Length: 234
Image (cartoon, rainbow, N blue to C red; front, side):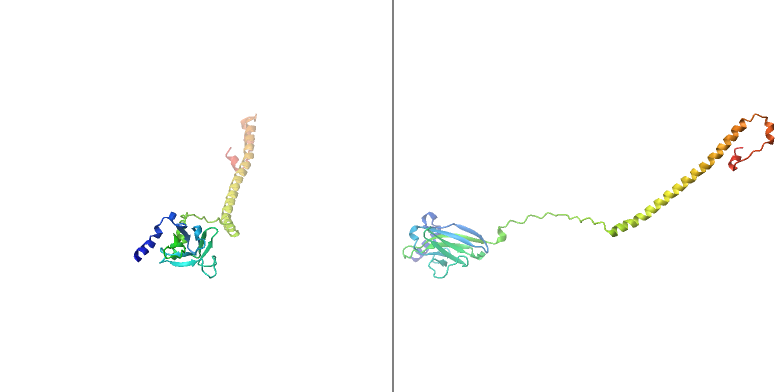
């Protein structure tokens, strides 16, 4: 008989929710270190009954964490587990703070019937506490970026080094230009000196051709050479 009674209690988690007078959500997922609020709804006839929050799958083998008839102070913000009953709304609320992964498991919202022949009315829920890293998406692959070095500013030292390199080029170019101008000037000067001599020679030839006298008269004539080059012409 005792074994049948225990077996019956063990089958309570599998009773459909529509047959239960206490109900809550089937599963909750919360991040590690966070808080969780579980609403447990009940029928009107349970308004004056004691409510409790228990960890386990059967009433006889579960660990009671909080009850509405606890005489100690009830602070949902500070207590690890607290229960607050609101008979007007027909719901009692369970608050769990600072949850850890080890707190994962099956829990039950229970209404204490207080009768040997009637078992407590309970509703089961599964709580999963997960690491924060397991719920975040993997980081996007980083794209390789080539960082080009910034252009070097033109400093006084770099400008001086460029000036030293340009000085020999400027000096050589100037010297070559001066030599070219000197050669050109010398040639122009020679041409300027030769042209008057040639003009004089042409004048002498013209006068010689125009001379009306006999050729024998030229024996006593005197020929004056202006320069060495004129000798080649006569």
